Amino acid sequence: MPKSELECRQAMSTSIVDNQSRLNIRPKEFKDSSLRLLRGTGIATALLIAAAAGAQTLRLPPRPADAPNGRVFAESVMALDRPAREERVVAEILRGNVPNFLRRLVPVSLTNSMEGVTHSVTVFVAPDYLAVGSDADYFLAPLTPSAARHIAGAVGCILPTRRLVNAIHAAAPLKLTPQPIPPSKEMVTMPVFARHNELVWEQRKAALTAHPLGTLVAGDKKDVVITPQLAAKPGKVAIYGWHRTNGVAIQPLYLGHADSWADYSHGVRLVQRMAKLNGEEKVIAEILVDPQLCQLLSDEGPLHRAEDLQSRP
Image 1 (spheres, helix red, strand yellow):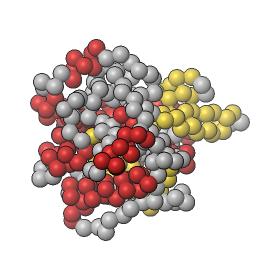
Image 2 (cartoon, helix red, strand yellow):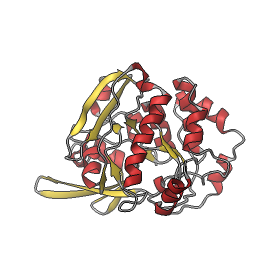
Image 3 (tube, one colour):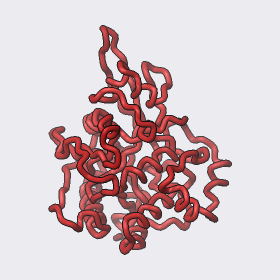
């Protein structure tokens, strides 16, 4: 990357290094592979001795000094198949190879009136989609729902609902114009992932002065979401969003792809597991299973699938 771009990202970034507690969830698909890749990195020790920097930050170790930046990492996995590539992405993220600006979560508030009583909830979301690398050079990583849930659970988060995706876009000070690439069989490959990453960065770079890294951003990806419909459609990925700047979503809620599908347009937005309901701390899972309170966060009724709710604190 030219020096001017690198300096631009660094100067405008919000550099928050968060040191927090141990990982506690390892879904079956990634348990063995992640342990192999993380062995010897010292991640367990780093997480055990880390001190919490604040309730609204991701539970991740500091970014390792030897961690590759986004472009170097993308090149290193370019020839790998999807399972092998995702093993590498998961391992890099869980050892802390994440931009500092993504570690500080942003509040998004929603309200709803039920039986004459107005309830409010504030959730804390990542300012952009999950990425590997540094503030100066990062790669927005499309992932299957299994990999996305694994990372979310490990860092104390869940994935968003459709209602939350809408609320995040509405609240985002920076709404990027979606950059679709014509559909093809290559849309699930790393070269197309990398191409789209560059398209998004060109937009993001142009907005850095007014909206530094760490600003809540939307419009750059569609979301991997949770929905009650997954209970009747196991083995599927649910996607939604990619809003135009006028607030209209390009992608309606869709469960037509197998859960092994991840194309260049998919992004993973992390939502902290703990929210504030009417000013009091509340686990999001408890809100989502409640027949009344779920309306704050879901426009489809309550959710009950344990793997979606990630209900462990």
